Length: 333
Ligand code: CP
Ligand code: NVA
Image 1 (cartoon, rainbow, N blue to C red):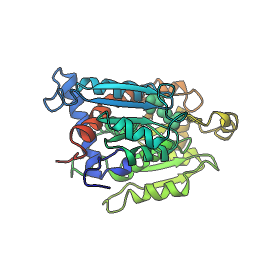
Image 2 (spheres, protein in one colour):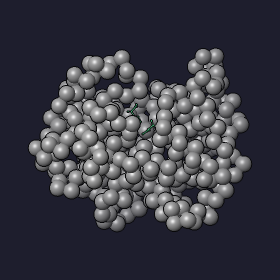
Image 3 (spheres, rainbow, N blue to C red):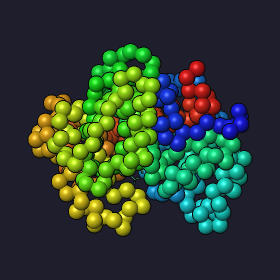
Image 4 (cartoon, protein in one colour):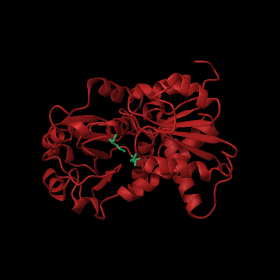
């Protein structure tokens, strides 16, 4: 790559612990300032005259609304390009699309299926590419999730390479998917332990385990990841119970088979009790939510952080656009 190649955000794995923690802290401080009625000087008009292309090959509520709204708050123009709007995939290659679009805009936010598609887009783009979800990662979601955790649990302070959350335990009960992979990478970097319970045959693939474990290299007190096929085991002593849909976008044909395989993996108050979650445990879910993976009782309870978590997508998007577009990837100055 040339020294002028832009920096991209394809996964939390692309960030050092200090950069990840800084994006979360910046999101928190921008949230506080803007909600108190003053937009920080550094953000005001920071994308003025700039266009952010939003290439979405899949449906989206939160990611689309948060990235468009973030662009507008920073004075830029969001250009939504749905899969029926542009030639990509039907008439034109990823390479040609990337070269052409990046010659006209300041950033590409892209939601695609295969990770290699967003990686190819980034490789040939002359402007930063921000992954808005692919089959392997969902970095904007994980910045928002750690913002939510940072706001909801006491932080111990400490070095800028962390958020002072060391020692927390997250239990993920459900499918090993894109959201889990980036969450586990973030947790490893932040010294947060994770226990993952999936049905047999739905565990984290070996190549992804390598990436997650690699995220802890050189990180003092890196979070530890364990896997089990027993939900109760994962939930034991957990501070946060997390899940996501059992049928991700693109897996619709497997829906019936998956429903059967995941039976017994619904997050319920009873599971938390049986498994011995910590007394003050909280619940998180990236949304959209389906009733099978979590009971209404938990989803709509005071333990549930799901709606602040969804709102935090906006603040995460602002921090990411600031870090990758305004500061050109020099997140830590
Ligand atoms: N959590 C999330 O990414 O939601 P959308 O698919 O609605 O963007
Ligand atoms: N795992 C889900 C997340 C949606 C935000 C999917 O990929 O469909």
